[in-house]
Image (tube, rainbow, N blue to C red; front, side, top):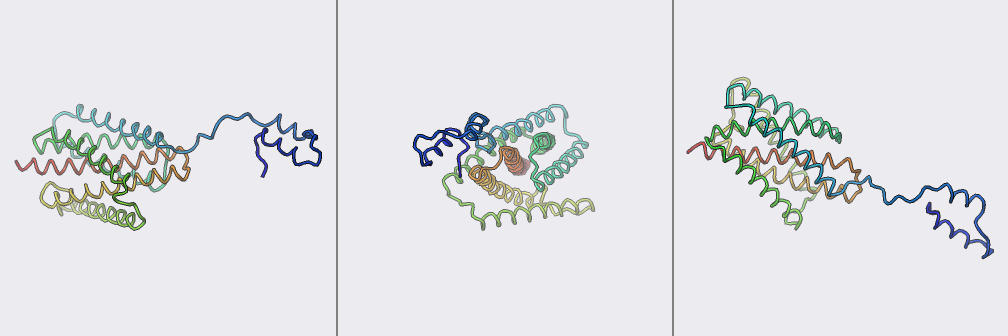
Length: 266
C-alpha cells in the first residue's frame, strides 16, 4: 500500500531499475495536488471531551435546580404534582436518549434542565420533611465522595467490570425500577407498597438504590474507557455525559431520601 504522504511516495523512485530516474509526470501531479498535512484527525472521544461535556450537563442541572429551589417558594401541595411531572418527563427523555443512543447536545442539555427541576423540587420537599435543609449539602457531599470512591475502585481494579458483572448490574437495576414503576401504578389505585416512600421499606430500597447507583458508576467508567480505547467518535462524549448524569442524579436522590428518613424520625 502506497503512502499518501508526498514525501514517502518519492521512495517509489528508488524501486526503479535506474538509480538516477526521477518522478514521472503523474507522480509530480499527485504530489502537487495532495493536501498539506494538518495534524492527526480530531474526531475521536478523549477523556477531556467527557469531562467537559459532563461539566456542561451537570452545570445546567445545578443551575436549574438552584433556580427551582429559590423560585418555587415554600412547599405547597402543587409542588408534588410538578415533582411527579418533572420525574415523568425526565424518565421519558432519558429512555429515548438511552435507547436511541442520541448524542445531540441540545436534547441532552434539555434533559439536564428537566432533571434540574426534578432535583430542585425533590430537594425542597425532602428537606422540608426532614425539617433540615442541611441534608441537601450532606447529600451532595455524599454523592461526590461516593463517586470518587467508585472511581478509585474502578481505577485500581478492586471490582472488575466483567461481562458477568455487567449482566448482574443491568438485571438488578431493571428489577429495581420495575418494582418502583409497579408501586407508582398501584398508588394511582390507592395501594402503596412503600418502596418509594419514607418509611422502613423505603429506607431499605433507598440503601439498595445507593448500592446499585454506585455499581452503575462502574459501568459508566468502563463505557468511557472502552470508548476511548476503541476510537469512538467525539460526539459520544455527550452520551457518556448523559449516562454519568443519570447515575449521579439517582445516587443523589437516594442519599437524600436516606437522610430525610433518618432525620424525619427525630
